[in-house]
Image (cartoon, rainbow, N blue to C red):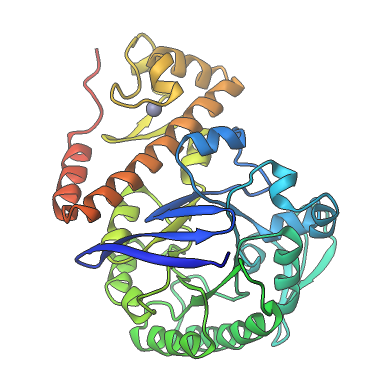
Length: 374
Ligand SMILES: [Zn+2]
């Protein structure tokens, strides 16, 4: 069975469909929880699946350093290693080399750097990134790219984009022909519309199974990001999945889907779950806040996740303040559940040609804010 994408309905620029892979279907728009080090922190894989996730993201940079791609391969690949048998997308390692590693050196060939864990020296090239992602057994492989933090000047953005396009061709050549596995190209070009078009054209010429809008959510702010998403997705082939990397907050996600994005990933729901932050229909709730200490009500009375079905705000407040492990477990579960409910709601709304109303209701509920204190 091969990798394929079927678009089922559109509503304005918003789209809903299904990506088919040998490891299962991915309903789009899809949110991918991040399993950085072969685990979505504080969650068992079956619990991640229970929240409604069809696919996980793994980080090449982290896995190549520890426990190493070769070791994971010897142990049967990433799916077996982490006990997740559904699709996995891996990033190329480039973004995290730039954000985490030290002594980075960028050349035409690739990038050398020192590990943030033990200071050991490593190199990633497009060819090595393809090799690592193959060893991991990733279902959706990302091309190796380079992206400057924004704001950056136009010359730097253009040079970086053109390097990434040469690396995209090398990634395609090194990936080869692997039925059932997909390779996604990554559009760059910052907030420059013509550079984005040049990048999209370069990727179209090479040909990929899906396309990512890269280089956003790197400090430009939501308004600038939406400004770019008003044109960038439409520059990419309509019949392939479009993936916005590293986004985001619930309102970022709704705005991205509205503009034609099919896939997203972000550490936010899991990371904020470990710091006592919950995302709900009514916005963000800080469980550390003393207002919850005597509150017997659930976090969200309409939510069916274990945290909301079985525990009070008072209990969640207590375990957050006591730094008990169950705090991160319950709030991560709730946050991932909320994100997947949000995606499901958008898929249904697009299929029903009701996305504008969905968006209005989404913002109206958030504007109400959290329930009144007791
Ligand atoms: Zn919940």
